[in-house]
Length: 438
Image 1 (cartoon, rainbow, N blue to C red):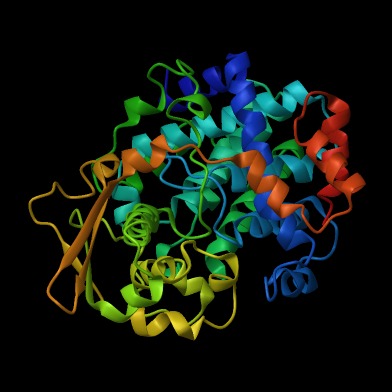
Image 2 (cartoon, rainbow, N blue to C red):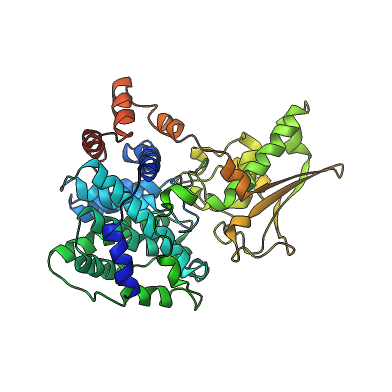
């Protein structure tokens, strides 16, 4: 049996369990929380109105693109470590767009989402860290195939049609990290969802791609001769990747590669305050700031001097300075548009110092850390190290994110949205789809 055939067999016939479905419900809740402010125009200059002038025809493909963009516009959506990207913001918009015209029951929807995340994580492992290191944006490339897999499951296609659909998606997959820090980065999620819908439509229209060899070719061509294709299949669904290692939900609207640096900075700030000092005194005393990490650990957070709010999401310098000043990474400081110029003088004091004693990030991103050190005028140094594993050990309040996103709604509307986000019934799913019309 070929690799594609074995993948398709698992995709078509495996059955997600109750634990995976609960994890899927939380994933939907998180995506609603990060998408709602953009859809409702609560975020200035989100870019969505401009996109609607191009993709405003109400088609399945346009709806998928707009929902994908809206979900990733704030860079506040979930992340998956095996995938090394943002799976839900591609998979769910493709499913939501399709379901708005072709309804299905809630369990079929949840299972399709779970299958999509499974394929996303396994593709990430199969192409290795080299795929990302070569300059690809996994959310865009691997996400196209994962979303296509979720649609194949939703449509309950047979193995031949599923293989063809995946091959069409794989040959369309594209997206470069070079676009990070621009509005095209969130548009990658929309493009991937749109391409998955297109692949499904072509399949249903009878356009047949090659049923074998395409997924294999994609993995080989995009992994710099370091592919592990066996990881696409081994121990499928045991456990489901939406449960373990699971979706990682963001506490801040910035690149995940900045979060442990932000948390280390917040610990230093709060320790200073706990000692009876003021923030103003701390900011006045700082003459230098260094941030250490494994070599290559800043591959995603590559912007050193941001010029706008989008670039700021990928800047360790800006993130550390903003956290020192405000004890949080505020959405308004990372929205599309002008920078908060008050942050920039402090950001200019931050220096990156990769730690040569640490293993390179490409070997094991799970070992990533940031160590932030503040040097004061009298020579005192305040230092805090925060690992990725420590960050993950602090759960994110996803329900709280949704409550915050809905704070401008009436109590009755809030209640409706909170209820449908639980997805306990097909009725809940249908109400959610109504609210997500673009």
